[in-house]
Amino acid sequence: MRTPMGGTVADGFERVADAFRAQLDSGAETGASVAAYVDGRLVVDLWGGWADAARTRPWEPDTLTTVFSTSKPIAATAVLTRVAGGAIALDDPIVRYWKAFPHPATTVRHALAHQAGLPAVAEPLTPAEALDWERFTAAIAATPLEWEPGTAVGEHALTYGNILGAILRGSTGETIGEVVRSFGVDVHFGLSEVDLRRCAEVEHGSPDWPEQSVHGHGDLWARALGNPAGLLDVDVLNGAAWRTGEMPAVNGHATARGLAALYAKLPELLPADLLAEALAPQVDGYDLLLEEGAVWTLGWRRDGTWVGMGGIGGSSAGGDERTGYWMAYVTRRLADHDRGNALYDAVEACLA
Image 1 (tube, rainbow, N blue to C red):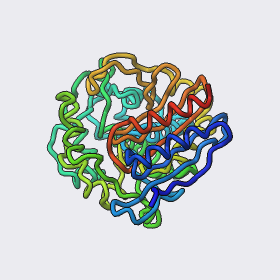
Image 2 (cartoon, rainbow, N blue to C red; image 1 turned 90 degrees about the horizontal axis):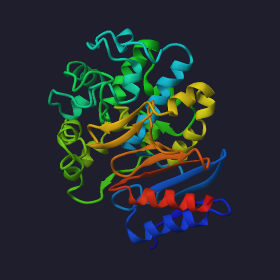
Image 3 (cartoon, rainbow, N blue to C red; image 1 turned 135 degrees about the horizontal axis):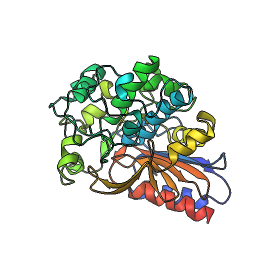
Image 4 (spheres, rainbow, N blue to C red; image 1 turned 90 degrees about the vertical axis):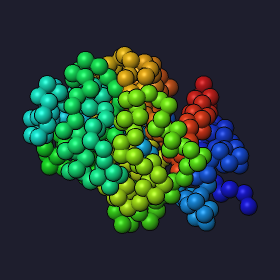
C-alpha cells in the first residue's frame, strides 16, 4: 500500500507536493506535515505518512508531534507579548521577576538572545527531574555561569524555556503554555487529555541517532544536551511527562499548519516596533555551543533575510522576509534537516 498523503497546495506550488510525496515514497519520511503562508494566504497544507511506529494510524490534518528547539521562538513570543503589555521590560534584570535567580547582571534581553551564560545545567539530572518544572528551574539557578552575561553567546539548548518561563511566571503568574494557548493556533506546551490522543509517536531515524545527537559536537554541546542522560530515548519522548509537562526550550507540540500560522500571525501578536526589534540581530558572533558563527535575535536565529528556528530531529519553522513566506515542517522521524530543507527549497523555487 502506498504511504498515505493528504492536503492541498495552491496553483503554482505543486512542486512542494511532489517533493513531499517523493520523501514519503522513498522512506526518508515516515510521518510529517508541511505548511506555508505567503502574504497571509495558506498556499501549502500537506500531511502524510503514519502517526505510529506500527504504521496503523495514518497522519491526519490535526496530528501533533514534538518539535524540539523549534519551540524556542514560541516561548520567546509568549514573553514578548507581555513585554508589549508592559508587564516585562527587556533590559530589566531577571531577578526582578524571578526572585531566586542569583545573577543580578543578567537581563531579560540576555535570556532571549542566548547570552545569559547558562546553556547547560551543572547538576546531573534524570529525565523525570528535568521534566519537573520546579526541580529543573532550581537546578538552572544553582548552576555557575559559563560566561558573564552579555559577553558571549551560546544556544541555551534545554534551559532557554525554563528561564523565560520563570520570568513570565514571576511577572504575570502565567505559564508559557497558558499564554501560547491564547494565540489561537495549534501549538502547545503541555498537552491536554484530548490532545494526547492526536499526538504522533516519534521514532529514531537510525538506532544511534540519540548518541550522534549528543556526542561529537563539542564539550558544551555534550554537557547541554547530555544532561539529563536518556532524554532523547523514545520511551521518554513518547511518555506522558514529556507530552504534558513544560520544558519550553524543546517540548512544544504542533501541527505544521499551526506553527506556520503562528509566524504569519506575529504582526497581530506584537506591535510593529517591538516585532522589528525582536527579529533584528541582537548578537552576531561565534556561538559557543554550536561552535559556529550565528546571528541571534530575541528568540529566533537569522541568516540574511531568513529568520526562524530548527529543532534537533528535523522539524523547523521560519521564513524569508524578502519573499514574504512563513513555513513550518514537523516530523516524527528524528533524523537530519535534509527533508525540511528540500521543502523550503521547493517553496522558494515556486516563488522565484
